[in-house]
View 1 (tube, rainbow, N blue to C red):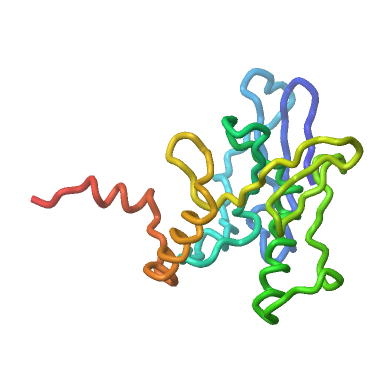
View 2 (view 1 turned 135 degrees about the vertical axis):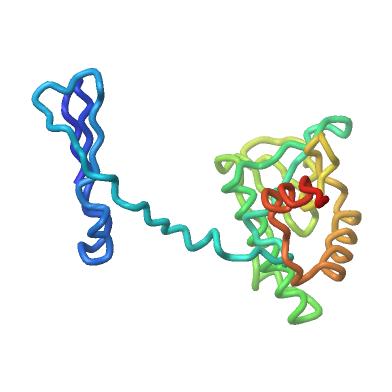
Length: 197
C-alpha cells in the first residue's frame, strides 16, 4: 500500500511481499516537518532495512560476449564515422549473425533456404545482408553501405575496430582470461589506496 496526503506530504508504505517475510517493513511513514498539524509524532525507531539485491552477490567472470553487449554499425561515407544501429536492430542483426555462424559450424556450407541472411532495419527502410556485410535501401535505388560488428573500440572515440582486429583481440582475450573473476573496481580502489605502516 502507498498513500500520499496533499501538501502535507505524508507518505505511508506497507506490504512489501508476504506479511510473514516482511512484517518489520509494514507501516513505514514519513511526515514533512512543515505541516505537522493533526499528525502524531512517530517515536518508534524505524524498522530495519532488508536488502533484496541477490544479483549484487554474483561474481562476474570473463566469458564470451552476449548479444546485448555487441553493437552493429554502418558507415554512410568512406571518410565518415561509423554510426550505431539502434539497440533493437543491432540485437536482431547479432542474433541472425550468430545463427548463421552456428549453422556454418554444424555444416561446411549454409543453404540459403535454411537461414535468411537478410534483415530489415531502420523502420523497414533498409535491408542488411549479413553474409556480404552490407546495408542497402529497400524502396529506392541507392548505394550499398558497409556494416561492421563492434566488439572492441578505439579508446575515447567510441568507434569500432575493424572486424579482423576485433576478432583476434577477442580470441586472445578469451584464451588468456576466460573464467577469471572480474575485480570489483570500487573495493579494489579502496584497497589499493590503503598503505600499511
